[in-house]
Image (cartoon, rainbow over all chains, first blue to last red):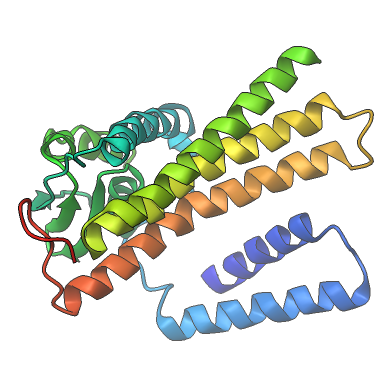
Length: 156
Length: 113
């Protein structure tokens, strides 16, 4: 079921981006999508923990994505002045951040949101916690407050 | 539409500024991890702003450009969605690789690497 679903989504994506509907290009699209689905199966991408893969990302469209975009902008401004500051005021550190998300999708969403906001990169995903590299004390503070975690959890 | 033009131009300019900042950051930062911060993430916002600018420009000049406006805008949006997912994933993969390789993060006060 997931195989068919992934193939369909990929093919629609190809057709939407291509815009050239000749037999050769559509054939190439079908071949590429089939290859990706085959590789994904081999890699075990379908063996995920938790529900239907797309709907929480859509329910978050109104609340989560705009908020995340705002965070990305704020955090970019912080990194922006650090980069141009003559003394380069950074103080990198490793932080362990606990997470209580219940599905793989939400864990991924949380980990990727951390990496998307400048000043923090998720280095490793361990059982119950992330290892995060933070660029400064300010980035660490934003992370430890747990606001992003609560917002991701509210999407579950 | 002069107003749309101004918004589109500012958006393109800001995007370019963020991209240049990312490049400067890569040059100035002291070690691998801090450089990954600049290379991987400034790009996401830069790309968002530049694509927003391009979409607005296409809409503002829909009459005079010989392109299919909705098709261009939809593609720009699709690529944006794609990059929002893949960019942090790639940054994480590279940083995790460095961490598993035993690369120790730079601390304040150490010499540059």
